[in-house]
Amino acid sequence: MAKESSFDVVSRADINEVRNAVNMAQKEIATRYDFKKSVSSITLEDDALVLVSDDDGKLKQVVDVLEEKLVRRKVPLKALQYGKIEEALGGTVRQRVPIAQGIPDDKIKAMNKLLRQRFKKVKSQIQGDTLRVFSVSKDELQDAMAALREEDWGVPLQFVNYR
Image 1: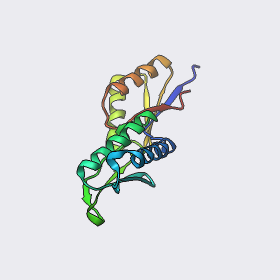
Image 2 (image 1 turned 180 degrees about the vertical axis):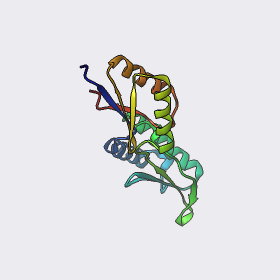
Image 3 (image 1 turned 45 degrees about the horizontal axis):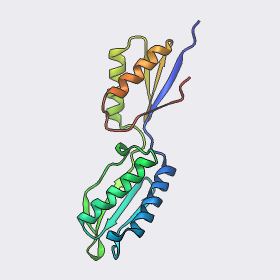
Image 4 (image 1 turned 90 degrees about the vertical axis):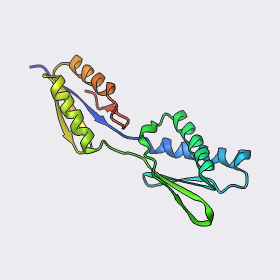
């Protein structure tokens, strides 16, 4: 009897890499001339970033610096979900940016449906916010990975526990 192979489809951002990127961005903001005498800052609170700056223009610059550092640390930008810009104390503006962890239910159901329609020999199972994919054929699993990569799901996908 042939042994089944499997992999898990997950969506996670490495929080340690995010923390490192935030620290690097904070250092750059502290040393850049255009941020002199500015109250611009980035803080990491649980699974969200809080960006604070003087005005909308400076906030956009803070976002640019942060995104540059995140890309260098190989954190997918799709994991960031920018909230609305709101007024804060002292005439500053604040923006909350949650970091997506896990695949939303509607997207995971759509992935499951796509795999069941395209591949007859592949079985998939939803396990919380991850999707486990099984097959006897490793080639079918590779094709399933390629099919999931082709679609734009709006969240970064990683394929883990490939056995």
